Length: 290
Image (cartoon, rainbow, N blue to C red; front, side, top):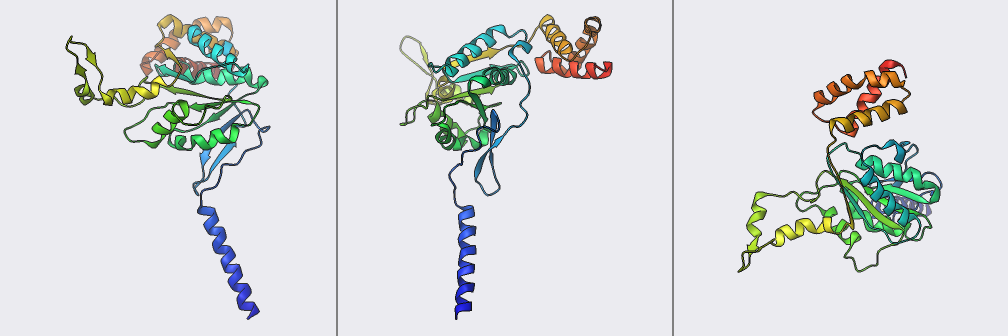
């Protein structure tokens, strides 16, 4: 009888362990001393964890050229945030490869010594934002929730979760958390021709957007600071190429002779972006043995 009872208890404990494994678990706090940046990831069990980013790209604000106006806005906002002053959530939009994500990483490196930290969250996991904010709310550090290449399709759950965190939840905003998001489009939901049918006109002919359009722009409006990025001219592109070649150890004479090759490289890719400039610089510096 005792043997049967022990076997039954063992099987019950195994069953309880399996049930606990699949039940939702509260998000645990990581070792905050392990890194200055973390990624939020979902395990196969559905449990979320904050994984430390061991090697953050060594990007500095001085490395970023031809975006001085954008840099000044982001740096000023981040400085206010780190200093404990009021600051805004930020939406960085515009041409691809123009330094949106690089600027955020550079700010992290510049202000990490003053307590700035970053948590990268994929669009698919934005529904868990309240749990992430709860974990960091009592920490002395300042946290940027970073969403890269953000855009939504109709009906995605993360859209409403992000709206609530930015502005609109019953709970007060957490003073040590801001959201910095990058996107190639300012209005984060797709805009379709049929949306124009919701517009109305008043008696004096003034046009008013309908509810569909208002909903699609409401998320963008909840970011207090909009920073726009634009395609680079040829001269701006070559300046960025020269910056990266210099950073990679290429001699000044070789930098000057690399200009025609840099233009061909951009032409082949159909873009004169900072990303293309960086890719060319890595290729050229590698070939030169820098």
